[in-house]
Length: 382
Image (tube, rainbow, N blue to C red; front, side):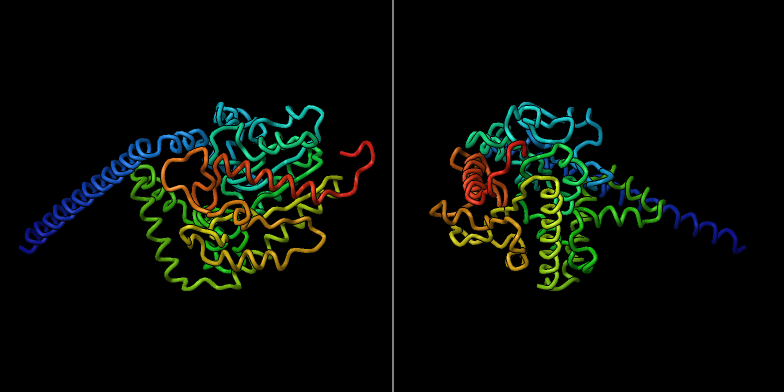
């Protein structure tokens, strides 16, 4: 006599759980649909309000997508064919993963590479003709500069590329333009401890995926595939919780990051000069470091500490130029473009430069290179 009531209760419970699961799934689908609609509305608004900057961003969007790479952690598509496939007339990529024009266009000039992250890549420029390297190539006829920057890279990845690829070209000059990504990534990983400082962007994400049990990883992959917008919001929430739990950023963490940044520069210097080339390091301009900001910004905690520590630790033998506040001496006011970009735009955000900014930086960089030129090399040198 107790079996029927028990069976009925189990059935009611199962029906209730099923309804709750269905309602939960329906709510999740609705939330995902709303977030996708919201994202689409923002894209439409951007195309309406800022048509030029949006169109230019679309040109290099494929080059801003990361693919796993055995030496660099992430890079452009792994195969030469894949790199060629993401290339276009405004944002060209060679089969070797260099921005066009590549080394084949050097003619009789000495070869030089500009290495770094998205600023060195000229991510926010209008075309291949208005990159930093293109401006440098118009300013002089001694070197032919080729862009070897990759969006999101820090100095550890630059060092790997120099060792595994760029030195094979026997360049006469290597110029690094960096600092921002080393500081930003270090700030994001500081809560994990000193061993994480200096790791590339998203190393923590990949590490967590590898450490996760395979069934859970499969479920997470299914979740991300079905509900990408919600998954992104969830990761952002977890990130915010993680940052709150971390507490205030410690100066020691940023000083350690700066020390590793300098070490990477020294290693690149040693490899380049041992191969007969010249190495020059440039700390890139960042709006936050400038004194002439029209509206003071606080884009990155610990940036000033990182910058000061890098300058302090920089060895005397390294040819180094601090461009962190470059535009304080070039502009009456340093500002970020709030609307659509124009021909007068310098900064499109706290770090990235538009065409005019690229040209101004190239001019200052060439003046620094010419002013810091080493003694004339004998005939036959690179």
